[in-house]
Image 1 (cartoon, rainbow, N blue to C red):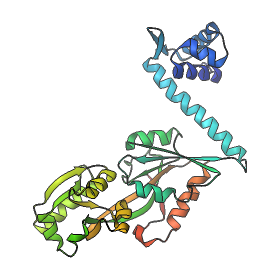
Image 2: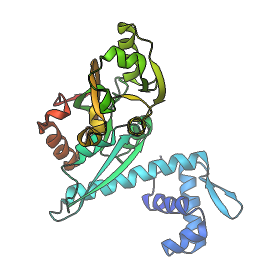
Image 3: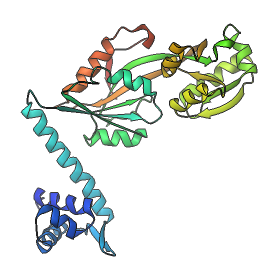
Image 4: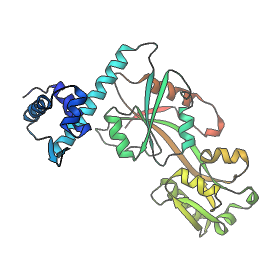
Length: 306
């Protein structure tokens, strides 16, 4: 088996990022011919062409895209190893957090609160779809993923799922509607609800079925931030965890009209078992679980391999 030369791999990554041999050679302070030779050596080692020429530039082949993904993971791991093992007391530490794009921003801020404003910590925040975030977690480009969806279970899953909080869900709307019965509100007021794909929607549909109510749907959204904005804009009454609209509730622009019994939103922090974990992960998890703020709802201090 041919031994992979990491120097060649680093040069390949530079060419892939720049898209031209000329630009990459300039950045690397190499001649274009020397760089081209070393890229061809890497291609011979791997047994595949990594680039194809298009016009004046280079684009990755399918093999090239795969090689670049692995190269990025390799060099991120090297950087992580150096930072972890050196453990410089005055070093600025980085926590890379991924969050489901539809997750409550208020909840994310509560989770990160212990680290916000610290001079020794840099937060890198990314949002996206859960499969993309979990791939980034496995590639070590994220340290933790915040979600309200438990990752799919199978025997090979490497994830640790930390149960953070279980938030109640309420019907939220203008304070002027306070005091009216829940069934009356659900039957006669326009409603803003999660989309059918959301777990909360299934619970809501079951609730109105039990009450014998045919709801008037004004809007559906899969994003908690959009549910919040629609409620603030007067589009209807929102089926939403109060934590999402905590500022509006505190200001009195919205009110919690009724608690929806049997409905809750669960929040999780997904991590990996790592030999050298980022110490900031344990710090923020410990601070969050240890917070006794009753407005967060019931919290579960648990970690289970999934």
